[in-house]
Each structure stands twice: as structure tokens, then as C-alpha cells.
Picture 1 (spheres, rainbow, N blue to C red):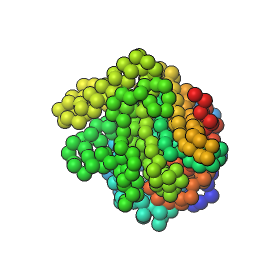
Picture 2: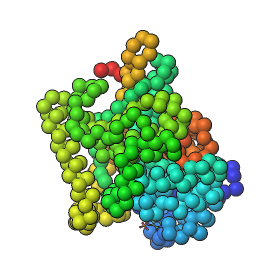
Picture 3: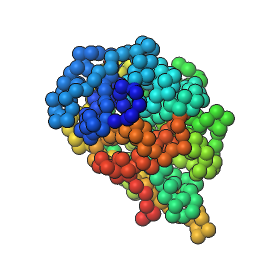
Picture 4: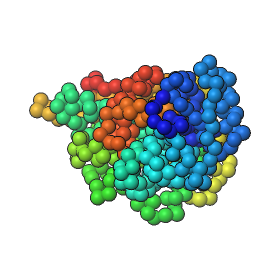
Length: 419
Ligand SMILES: NC(=O)c1ccc[n+]([C@@H]2O[C@H](COP(=O)([O-])OP(=O)(O)OC[C@H]3O[C@@H](n4cnc5c(N)ncnc54)[C@H](OP(=O)(O)O)[C@@H]3O)[C@@H](O)[C@H]2O)c1
């Protein structure tokens, strides 16, 4: 438990939703009331009572979970939440719709904050409006602490830290490979994706943000050598495999570039990064890459046009609040390999960092990534130079997050590349 006068160490805000409930479940399984003054928050007392009753009934340790009632549309309730809490851990999304007043309250009260956003347009809004104030207030506002973007951001940090230690300098390029990923998708995630596409189709400024690979970098530093996400099948330049676009590249690559910029370019200003899906060798790999690229292109087109977006929401997507099946979550797994390539006086070198686990990446895996991010902020278990600001997982927490994730069943480590 922390030793300040705030009532709650961590509040899981949105605990009645799919991700929020899983984060709460994870924290109550992993920690005890002696370690952690945990509370759950949301807008619906009866649902919150139900979550608290289920979790305390299943637990030997937790016989009480305090409830914080509020509403994302009621700034006063968010100010109370922020004033009484060390770390707000929020899964109330779409963040474009609900997120800003909570960030505002956390910055006002110098409260640490972590979320699961993959909404680039909203993250950029928060960078522009709150970074300086969050630095002044010593509030760490840490976006994208789930499957977007911990494996990519932490993986790149691990690869670069290893390269600097072993080879005396950083890699000039990192390819982030989605090698394995199996899991479900919730209504809340699809609603957030729809919100992003709707904003992009209505607002040319949002399209500009989504079109700039450096849009999450600090103002004045929003250009560089990277051309943007891979959109077509491609024979990979660093391994004998075909690759296809990755649906998470748009957020993950920008988060990695923001980490490099915030940390003052330890990987160089010419550092390039790209995230792709690995589809295998030979003709089979090429064909799968074509199918993945085509499927993603069709999905993007369908989501970009209002009539098809509305049809998808009405007839295809699960509703917000609906999550993946138990079976999907139980059999879920993922492995993200960040391969870095550098050159030193002895010639070229290649390093690999792997972040993965036998958990559903977006749900049981994300619950652990977000829960451990919140705990790292609470315990100040970081190697970060920052006390405040709008930060990324790598820049706010850094390598201690890898140790924390390994302690809860993940692989999160780097080595010399073997092939
Ligand atoms: N990065 C990742 O890997 C990752 C993974 C999973 C989810 N996500 C993101 O996390 C977010 C949540 O996803 P989810 O599947 O958990 O969604 P969800 O099941 O729809 O949950 C949303 C939560 O927000 C609450 N909420 C909605 N409006 C509110 C308001 N006005 N005031 C207070 N609370 C409100 C809901 O409360 P009620 O129960 O009362 O409706 C619920 O607790 C989404 O943005 C999704 O994209 C990201």
C-alpha cells in the first residue's frame, strides 16, 4: 500500500466492462489487500456491486472492494476520483468519446494514469493539450498499456538496451514482427475502432494525424525518415519470410517513435521502425500475405465509409460490453519479435527481443500488461527519467515492466538473433 493520504492506490475505472473486469480479476488474484488499496469504478452501482460480489466471493484474500461511482460525462465526479487516487487505470472507451475529462482531472490533481487506447487521433489530442501541464503537475499520463502497444514499445526498448550493452550502440532499424497472435475481440474495441474511422472520415485534421508516421512525436519533431506503415505483401528484408501489414502498426509504430523522441533519441534521429505480420516462407507465405493485406484493405474500406461502417456495427460487431468467448481467452496466445539491426566497428549485428505469452493478447494478456503498468507506476518501479508528462510504456516505466511481466508468465527478453 502507498503511504500518501489518498484513499485508493489504484482505481480500475470501467471495471464493469470486458477489459476492466479482467484487469480487476488479475489484480485481485496477484495482489492482496495488504499490498494494494484497490477500488473499482464506473457509472452503474448495481453492475459494480455485481463485479465486487463476484470477485470477493472467488477470493480468499479480498472480502471488500470499494466502489467509486461517477460518470465519464460528469467532470466533478472525475475530479473526486483523481483527487482520491494514486493511479487511475482506465478502460472506459472509446477514449475519443469519453477519455479527455479524466485526463484533465488527473493532470489537475497530479494523479498518475494509464489506459488502453489505440486511438491515434485522441492520443495526439492529449499530447498537444496536456503534455506540458502533466510535466508541471508531475502526473504520468501513460497511454497504450495493453496489447497496443506494450509488446512493440517494450520489445523495441529491450532490443535497443541489449544492443547498446552488447554491441556498444543502438540498432538503426527495428522490425516488429507479429509472429503469433490468437485471441478474441470485444464490442468495446470494435466501437473504438469505429470511432476512429468516423473521426477520420469527418475531419481532415484527423486524416493528417493518421497520415503522419511521426504524429505522436513532440511538436516541432513530427518528421523523419520512416515512410509509414507497410500496406502491401512484402518479402522481408531481415528474414526469409513474407510479411503482411499489421492492423496495430498505426498506433504501435507511432508509440515507439514517441518513446525515442521523449527519451531524447537514444536510438538516433534516423531510427526506423515498422510493424508487420509474419506469414511464412515461399509461395504459401506470399499467398497468405496477399490474403491478409487484402482482408485488411477491405476492412479499412468498409470502416471508412459511413453506410458500411453502420452496417458492420449493427449486424456484425458484438455490442460494447460483449467480449471474446471463454474458449478464445483460454486458448489465446501471442508472440511479438522485435528484430533490431545495427552496425558497429566489427560490422553489422542483429538482436531480437521477444514479448509474448499464452494469454489472449487483447484480454487476459492485456489485463496483465495494464495491471502491471498500474502497479509499476504505483510502486515507482521504473527506470524512467520522467515524473510527469504524456508518456509511453517504454518512456514512463521502461525495462522494469519486462521483469514484472515475466513474473506473471510472459516472455519479455532480448538476445543476439539466431537466424
Ligand atoms: N489496447 C488493447 O490491447 C485493448 C484491449 C482491449 C480493450 N481495449 C480498449 O479498451 C476500451 C474498453 O474495451 P472493452 O472491451 O472493455 O469495452 P466495454 O466492455 O464496452 O467497457 C467499457 C466500459 O466503459 C464504461 N463506460 C461507458 N460509458 C461510461 C460513462 N459515461 N461513464 C463511466 N463509464 C462508462 C462501461 O460501463 P457500463 O458497464 O456501465 O456500460 C464499461 O465499464 C476500448 O477503448 C478498447 O478499444 C484495448
